[in-house]
Image 1 (tube, rainbow, N blue to C red):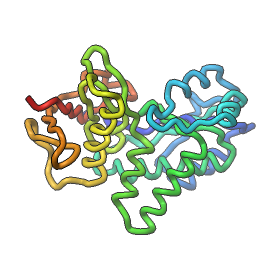
Image 2: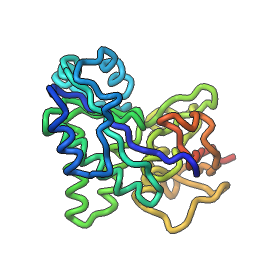
Image 3: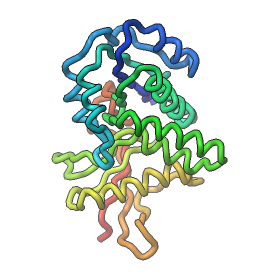
Length: 253
């Protein structure tokens, strides 16, 4: 696999310089970097639209005061993770979440994942970081992994060309993204996507999924068949490109 995913995180703030941002990045993980080429100590009038487009589609958590903070930002910081190898995906994605939380505690007013097209509200980011820390402290690795899934996976995006609803962000967690037919209600599509995504990343099955296998929402519920495919939706240099490919859950005939 030539293309490795990486977290690209946009954080808005009111900083006069990047001294505190750089210090936090260095203290949380020296493997992460402040991208000074694209960061800027001035407002960017594209940010409101960018955050509107990236709001969590199933749990929008950016509230009134946070939108006003986005409007009034005076600095933009882009943070880069190292390229993510599959075996390092969970630890790097955990570090990315904790880093976002620390930056929001130190003058950041909003954050979004460029790599998943996903923005949470400031309080939601802090809540997710707290939930992750609690899961680790309690030894509940399933809860900790599920929190990372909710932090970094956007769903469900409509693709008219393939008549599907799909996720973006599983590449940051070392797995295929998931798609289902768009004849489903969006809420039902999200249930299927989440079931598979959490099964892969939080349940951690002992073997790889096989094409043609069946998958159910419940023991007595409808059955869908697994189809595997490469990522043709995005170019290899796109933030959303998933080198692991896709799982499509198709209706059982």
